[in-house]
Image (cartoon, rainbow, N blue to C red; front, top):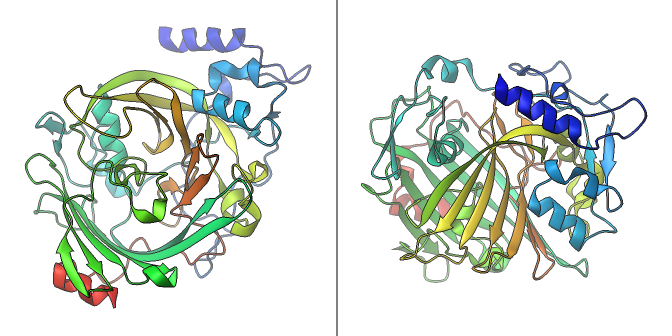
Length: 424
């Protein structure tokens, strides 16, 4: 109770007035009202997710003129975006709608915290649950993100874009299939998180280049296994380097393998610190962005901010600092996890001199036909080059990902021989 009162007092002291009768307060966040079934406008045969909050209006727009008034609810990365791109970057702030949900079966399995083992490299708990419903340390938030509900038998495709300051861009696309083992709908006796197989479909020079990754629930006991298929040689080889700070050629140096989906893989190269819960403006309920064709959102320096929605959100902030005896090209990372859905919503990366390298956003929507909250893209804004990368893009004009196929993928597909068949 005292914590809530203190937060309220802090908020009331911030100069939030945007008109004579409009202020922010803790009450604006409200209680959770999860969307657990598709809204009436939803058509499962289309790639659209109609906006449940389409009639909400903008509370205020933060821009280069007024952003100093809101420093206490902006992240350092957002402040840096205002400094780098004062003429184009803005944030449209909407009412907070805590709409995230998961299948009821996930909640039924969630009673108490799982157990961290091997210095946080592994987790043991009720398969398919929210592993740490009562988080008390940094890696609890990281594991909640990694093991959040993300479907079961998955199939789909998504493009990526790298946008240069001169408006030229690189486009690429791929297909993927996956088996997710941390869910209530399948039996998991293998100690695995999941199996993922991907292949490039564009550009043609890289077409059919493919990879297979098998991820366990304990990176110390059973490290990640990975293989790649090279269409030039038509051979599959083991690829133990697909981890940590390996940079795939398609990323053009902007992101590392362990930044996919926010964060993934082994955690042993960092010391992890729980900074605590904070109130910050986060990209949230980004239905308008999802319903806009991709060509309209790709603008120089950053995505078209007219289509993004930001809300005041409770986030759990985690800092990862590189250990003295380890190496990684990202010495420091600050991650912001949604306290409701456990998704990473923002990440900021820093170099060895504590200068910010990049600001990253993961706007989420509720895919309410599951239901589950996941990001509609991963945006990485690189401050040195002023380029940005949009990965794992989900949009109305891109075929919908199938999150729970009626027929499971054959397990034998997720082998080196299966990878060769998948690639062709």
